[in-house]
Image (cartoon, rainbow, N blue to C red; front, side):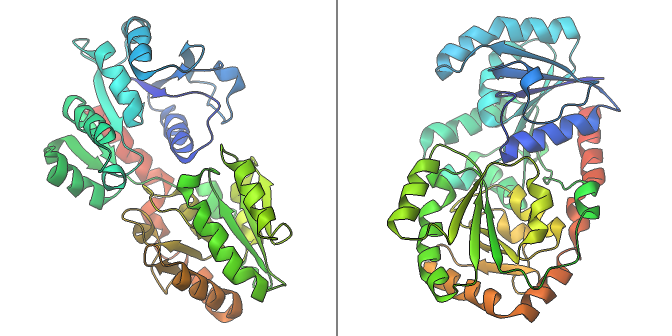
Length: 361
């Protein structure tokens, strides 16, 4: 069988891009796998490793308006799918699904819509909600990340259960094997993700302002790049936290760095199934996160291997974060429990789910 993954571009390194890349690489041994990028540079400049057996191409040189791109890619995408004899098109994102549907119509190609967010996170945005409804109605299967999203699609969008499936994001065996003994002496905290305001940068700043001055021997490192990096840098300077809340930039070896830290933090108000929480869990360090509608509660067992805080209680987050900082035995106990239920997210079984889905279509 021939499977094609339809992505935005080859230079993305966000959670959705990494998940799509992992699935494509993982299936390359069982299927003929293709990756088609909507726009941007060719795959030779890919920010993520691509299995050499995978065939790659891109459709447009640069991003445009949704309606314009839908028109511009219809013929070339349709031609590629036909010429290559693609059986299943996996759209890595609802946006990609909407763009692909006109090109796929009446070709016999089966379509999979991957929603890497959560329906409730943008329910009030009627444009996005309607895009999700259209993609779920017309694609053969929609993949969601949590049981909450699975039920929300049925309850709010009236999508039949037969067109929905839950498949978790995964952690590679290499990441699990690379976990080091917990460093109970570490007094460094890690935050990682796209540096955009939607990821809760205002919460990050407010919590840092409350916590760091009282703990002068601790440091909070922020990994990632994004549109609001300079805005965040300016805000850190305004609060006098330059040496305490440290911008580390975007790095290619992030999973290997978690083990240097006492615990990982997530301050986002909305998530799907956060890959950073899984990476920290695999590395064997505790997580602390707001209990936003989907994602964190599927990964963190509050009080066992991490901390869940009511949304968006800055004061409670700060207090519970200080408990972690002050109680080395608590951190060590949580770290020891982090691998207890990791099998739910292991890459091998999750890739099998993907292979079974593709064959069933």
